[in-house]
Every structure is written in C-alpha cells, then in structure tokens.
View 1 (spheres, rainbow, N blue to C red):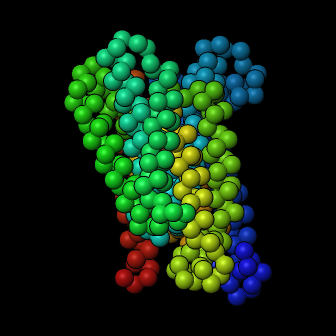
View 2 (view 1 turned 60 degrees about the horizontal axis):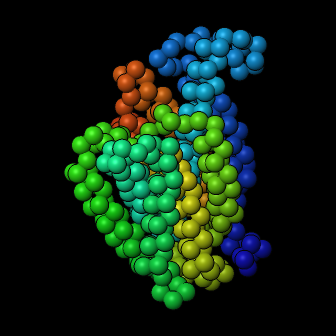
Length: 352
C-alpha cells in the first residue's frame, strides 16, 4: 500500500501517537480482564470463597466439587464469553468501517439469521422426529451461517465486484427471508418453543473446553487480520475517492473483511446463540474513548467486549439463580443506557 510510507497520509489516516495510546489500552484492558474474570468466578448458585478459588486456580486445593464447578462450569463459560465479546466487538467495528455506517453490526449481513435458522431447524427436527440432535445444534447453526454467507455473496456479486449497496441489500433480504422461515418453525413448534427463543436470545450455559478450542483460532486470527487492515479502514473513513488516491483497493478490502468477519461470527454464534447489541454499541464506546483511528479503536473494542460480555453473563446467571435470563436481554439493558450516557457526554463536550 503506497500510503504507508507517506508521512502526510499517516497523519490523515490516524493519530501520530497511536502506539502509545494502544500500549496503554492493552495494559489497562488486560489488567481489567483478569480482575473482572476473577470477580465473575466468585458468583454463582454455589458460593465459593475467593481464597478457595485462588487455591483451585493454583492447584493447591483438592476439593473435587469446587474444582468441578470452577474448572468445568464457570471458567469455560467466562472464557467463552470473553472470546464472544472480542469477536462481536471487533467485527462490529470493522463492519462499521467498511460499510461507513455507524448503525452497522455483525448481524447486518445475514450471518446471524443463517445461524439462527440452522439452530431452530435442529430444535424443530429434534422434537418432530424424536432424534436427539442437541449435540449437533452448533453444526446446524454453522451450516446455516455459511449458507447465508454464500447467498449474500452470490446475490451481491456483480461479476468480480462486491458493491456496497448490493451487499447491504442482500444481507437485509436474506435476513428477512430466514427470519420468516424461523417464524414459521416457531409457529409449528410446541415443545421446542422455549429452546428456540432462549437460543435466539443467546445462551452460554453449554460452554466447555472443546468448544473453546474450536472458537479460539478463528476469533484470534481473524481479529489480528483486522488489525492489519486498520490503515485501509482509516483511509476509507475519509471517503472512497480519498481511499482510492491513497492506494486502497476498496473492493478487495470489503470482500476480505466481509468473508473473514462472517466466518468469525459464524463460528461464535454456532455455540453461543444470538447475542445482540454488543457489536453495535461497544465499537461506538471505544470510538468515543480513543477516537476513530482503527489501529487503536479495534483493539480497544476487543478489550471492552472481553470485559462487557462476561459481566453481562454473570448477571444473567445470578440475578434469578438457579434460573437464567437470556444474555441478549442483559446486554441490551446494560449497554443501551451506558451508550446513551457516553453519547450525551460527548455531545455536551462538543457544545452540541
């Protein structure tokens, strides 16, 4: 990319002190994640003293019951929430960049609708046929998400181009189509209604180490790739003409981010269900805190997502314990007021 070596374009693309800001955010975010995750380990149906948790983490305690609760139930769930928060927030920030739309989120391109259709179909078939399909629900969801990606891409593609308007319209169309089919499945289903609704609102209760192993690679590698696209996204935020002058291949950039982001979201929602609001709000909060430079904003979004979602999940599983509230409801109830407060404070500072 030609503009990498151009000093003036560097100043246009983002802050000149972005490295210092990025290092500070990584240090602050990593410390906060460790503290928040440890606090979340303390909460649950069974009360475990913090000293006992430290002993279990260091391997000096031999209490089998508490060890099972921490290592097989709470810890995997917190790690899955952390990875999901990173994925949703980073992809949300990247999609807002390529679409140049602050209202864009990871689900605007139909990936979530595909995953939801696959999962609801598995639940419907389980009760309709009597076959136990619960272990295969993530596979159904992943298949539906990949089908959605294929349909959106093939519908939007014009020869070898991927127009922005076509991409958005295709995503909205596929979302409406799949949502209509989901509505029919819900209407036809009686026994599986609760399972469908709960999955559609997000569910981390089935998290385990095997699922974490599968999700970790696409989330971490995909988010790192997004970071290397940061300068391109900065240039695109100035306008398509400016980005072209700076040497950015907009068509390839959109295609790559669309495919990589869709794969990340598909791999996550296949195991966690649909968790809305995170990919929309967290990038906005990150942008308000550190500015629009994607070199800092995207990592900050990932860190904030890794903090925000474990907190929401802890509330979801403890407010009415031993029952649970769908985590999607918690993310909306907490995220919306915080976002409104930060937005109003920012407007006040700017004298608006």
